[in-house]
Picture 1 (tube, chains in turn orange, blue):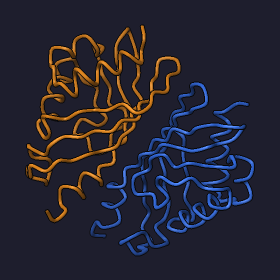
Picture 2 (cartoon, chains in turn yellow, green; picture 1 turned 180 degrees about the vertical axis):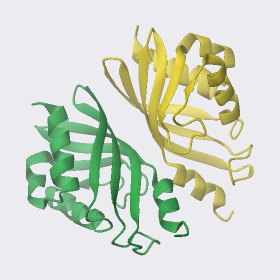
Picture 3 (tube, helix red, strand yellow; picture 1 turned 60 degrees about the horizontal axis):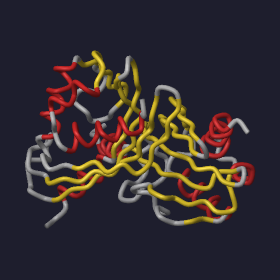
Length: 138
Length: 138
């Protein structure tokens, strides 16, 4: 398996395009969110259906979102991904009702592989950047 | 060179212990901060002296800070590091005068190697977590 192409396709199809059915091709039976500050599912282990539910609810805040991969570092069953993200704030976030503003975010994720699919991640995103863009005077 | 041990020692001696002279052992002649939202030196290429200046000024906000490495992913001349950070808010941050509060932060960094030393990084830290801890009612 070309794991870099796999992660790139996962981000494109699942997160950027929002293809819920595609989750079956990329995610293992159990997916653990080891560390992801601010993610409502942080610390949980999800089934495939649980992952799909998280995908749909997470994408609702910016349905036109696009992940752009900047760098990939692979070793063993893990890949670190540096990414940039952009979208339009068309749905509510906790404490931040939809504003219609264009927003951008930076993040880094380590993905874990097991049984030929993704089994979890450790992630940090620059939430303060999003907060500042949304609350800035227009 | 065992690059994982090198990065671990760099974080321990330079960032956790604040040993300014140790910078000479770990940092290349030029160090580029490729991406680091909120870092005052973001986008700049520093000399060794410039790096030491950034170290001293950055550590002043929490002089007792400790980096704890959670995961390392190495490929070629790059290492991704997932880390946790804790310290005491004893110095001012932009817009956030010292409070004396204990604070914690999560982050991920990709370090780049060149000529036997560190030549730069791409980093994202959870700045919102710090902001929330400092501004929370005590």
